[in-house]
Image (tube, rainbow, N blue to C red; front, side):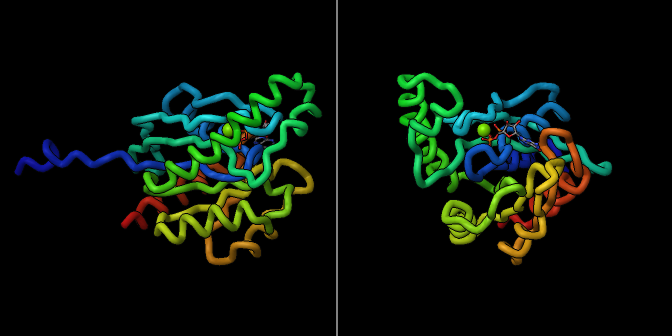
Length: 202
Ligand SMILES: Nc1nc2c(ncn2[C@@H]2O[C@H](COP(=O)(O)OP(=O)(O)O)[C@@H](O)[C@H]2O)c(=O)[nH]1
Ligand SMILES: [Mg+2]
């Protein structure tokens, strides 16, 4: 009879993972903005903008009359090679670029460290890029090994050369949702998929 008072359902820990620049923060920001009015973190065309794990608690996502409470976790991009010289192309000064590379390397370690803590993970991929690479395969392989439910988001479908089908054929055993985090395209399907994913938590 006291259920409802004592049954505190824990927030679902929702991680955003993927390579740098895929749009993890843009996506997390849009969700946060939609449901809390606030954003999560800064977005940049310079890779490795997010170099520390960012959290947003009590994000209540409402979709089709249902609500679910999430703790959102935005993570630094995972990369196999981080070279400061790459940042120089974006007119970042040499000293800053070296610091950025060092922090980005630490960020990769942080991202992986937090993986075990996630209930569900959204892997954000840039649909204008080739999905067949070591980073994507390693991230998804790690999630499978840990039995963490995963949804693949093919982001940037607003760009002409976006190829969602290529991501689908690279990872045929997963749900893939094409979205544009920047322009808010296909978010109804995205929220639907998140609710469905949450049911798979063991
Ligand atoms: N065209 C387009 N650009 C996007 C989209 N989502 C993110 N971006 C851009 O991609 C870059 C990296 O975004 P960010 O969210 O910082 O990526 P993160 O490193 O994965 O967190 C920024 O320049 C964003 O404006 C999208 O849906 N469409
Ligand atoms: Mg980011």
